[in-house]
Image (cartoon, rainbow, N blue to C red; front, top):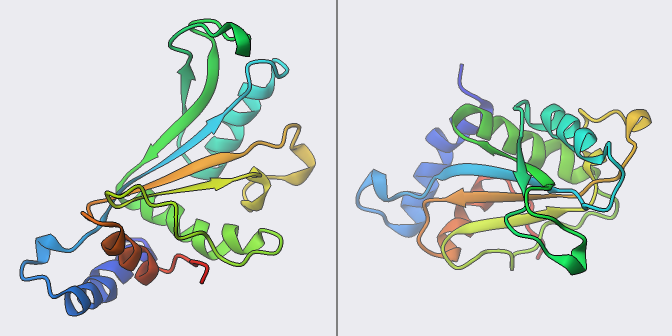
Length: 179
């Protein structure tokens, strides 16, 4: 069974984009390619911080994250080559649509004084990046068991060529942009 947001894209959003932008070929219509969730962990934190980040990200995304290692040593950051510096998950297909649906409908509205996400986080090629300062906005996280407050970066990669096309796609998908 297809996720709710994927059905919405196929039935409503694609038709709206074709009407608004005047695409001749249905394959020209932008779509979401993947979502990358990244959680960086400071090297100077306690030993259990990385394990907690992995556990929280597994609960949030439903996939086990890959541990990121430092590529080279940086003395000012007390970082050595090969040290674990964070974790990331790449979501595609149905899992991607389910995560985006949970992000837009349940997680983002739980942010205190939420007025929408910024419109300036596009990179110029249709990719949107969003930074969250706390993982506890997701309902999958039990607040009693949180030891470390951990932020995360969420990158939504689309097939759009310009920021305007990507903005229209995400707006029709339900992303709550600020004015």
